[in-house]
Length: 500
Image 1 (cartoon, rainbow, N blue to C red):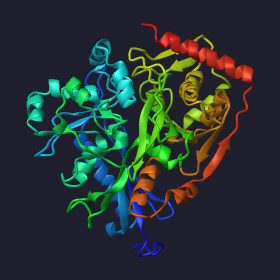
Image 2 (tube, helix red, strand yellow; image 1 turned 90 degrees about the vertical axis):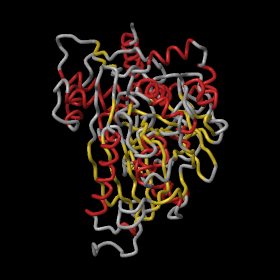
Image 3 (cartoon, one colour; image 1 turned 30 degrees about the vertical axis):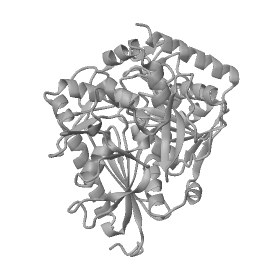
Image 4 (cartoon, one colour; image 1 turned 60 degrees about the vertical axis):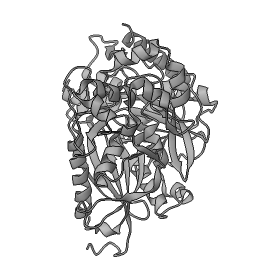
C-alpha cells in the first residue's frame, strides 16, 4: 500500500461515462481527486443522420478505467466506500435479459434518424401532453423514439420485448446491470426524466406514452433515488464487492457537483454539447420559451427540479475543426489563435450539425459559417467557433430568466472547455454576469461522488457546499453597445442556419 495514504482512508469512485470517453475518478474523504483514468470510445456514423456506439465497448472501457485507477493509486477495493455513476443521457440501449447482450448498437443522443417519427407525433397533437407531463419537447434527442425505432426495425425485437425477454436502459442502467451481474435493472429519476416516457409530476412511467410508442413496461427499469444504497458489485469484478450508491445524468451531476442546491442557482457545462441548468426547487416550472423542465435529483424521496437548455454542439465544434477541417492540431491552440485574431472579423459559426436545441428546437437547421470575406483567416473561424459556445449559452440563459423571473448574477461553469480563458472572458462579456470557474472542473464526476458519499454518510449537503472552491472569477468588461452589436449579428447568423 502507498505509505502516503492512511491505511483506513476511504474513497469514492465516480464512473463518468461520457459521449466520447469512459472515465474513472477517485476522490478522497475531502473530495480531493486522487486519480483519473480515461479511455476514448468510438462513435459510429453508419448514415449521415445516425450516431451509434457499441454498448459492450463502453462497458469494457468503463470497467477497465475503474480497475486501472484503483491499481495505479495503490488502493484496495475494500477502501472504496461507494461507487457513483454519471452518464451521457438519452442514449438508448436494448439488451437480452438472459444473456446481457445488446441486440443492436446503442443509439446516441445526437442521433437524428427519428425526426419523421417526431414530426408525426407533433401532427397527431401530442406536443402539449408531452410538455405538460414529461417537461420535454418532442424531439429525436430523447430516448422514446429511439427505443420505438429499435423495436420496429431490429428483427424479432417487438415480439421479444412483449414476451419480457428484452430490457431497455440509458447508459446508467446498462452499467448498473453489468456491475451488479444482472441483479439491478434500475435508473434514477434524473435519467428517467430524459426518456420522454416518464411523468415528472407523478414520478412514474406514463402509461399513455408507453401505449403511444408501443413500449412494454416490462422492458423499463425501476426508478430510484439518485443517492441510495442499491446493492453491490458482483463477485469477480473487484477484489471486494463495492457498494453501488449513486446514479445521475451527467448534467444534473454537474449541477450537484457545483453545489447549486439553492433555488435559482445555475451552471453551464461545456462538453460535447453545452448544458445550462437552473435549480428551480421542489416544483417544476413549465417553460414558455423553449426550455426543458427536468428532474435535477432525488434524495430520500425529495425531488428537486430544474430548467435546462441543451445546446447540441459545443466542444464538438473544436473536434470538428481539428479532425475534419485540420485548422488546429489540438484544442489548446484555440485560445492563442482567438486572442491573436483580435476579433471575429465578422465571421460567425452556427454549429447546427445536429440541428439546434434550446431555445429554438429546430431539427432541420444546418451548420453554417457566415460573414466570410477575403480578409477572413483560419484564426477568425476558430475564434468564431469558440464564440458560438458563449452565444448559444446566452440564448438559453435569456430564456431561462424569462421563465423563472430570476435575474442571473453569476454563472458557475465546468467541463473541459472552461480551461480556455478567452472563452470564459467572452462568456462573461456577452452575458454581462460574473463567471465562476471552480478549482476542480470535474464537476460531473464530483456530483456523482458527492451523491454516493451522501448515501454512505461520508458527507452532508452542508459539508459539500464548503468543499467546492472557486479558482477564478471572470468579470464582464465589454461595453453594452458592443455586446448588443455582437449578439444581434449572432441572431442574424442563426436565422440563416434555420433557412430550409
